[in-house]
Length: 171
Image (cartoon, rainbow, N blue to C red; front, side, top):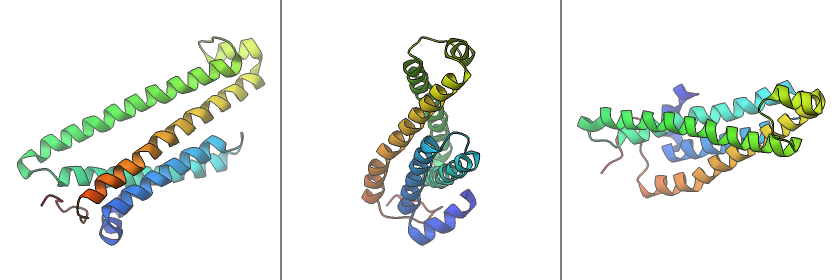
């Protein structure tokens, strides 16, 4: 997908590519949240939709950010951008993991430190059901977070003139 971003950016505009990617990511996360237990094919398809969205957003965003930098600062800007991506990924795992743990404890109505403890407490089937429900809540939270970025990204992209991928956007 990432290899197609330059041609898609030239054809539809970088803003449309980024916006489409955000929508696909959110749709994929919601689809994963509502995929029935045991439907591995459905979960894989939903994950592919989210992954395609991610593959559109990241390269286009990086190109947009680094393309706006003065040539002598491009390395610094690229480094700050990469650090931001890593920080966002780490915080995302922490926040969504916390949401899942809180949801799991609420589903079980007990304070557990591991899935093994949950199985011992309520049995395998109930623990698995609680885990699935809590994972669904984490995926919904991820979709909401991504969706919040949509209007913000659109507003920012509309303020600047559309640029071809690989071309600086500064005036």
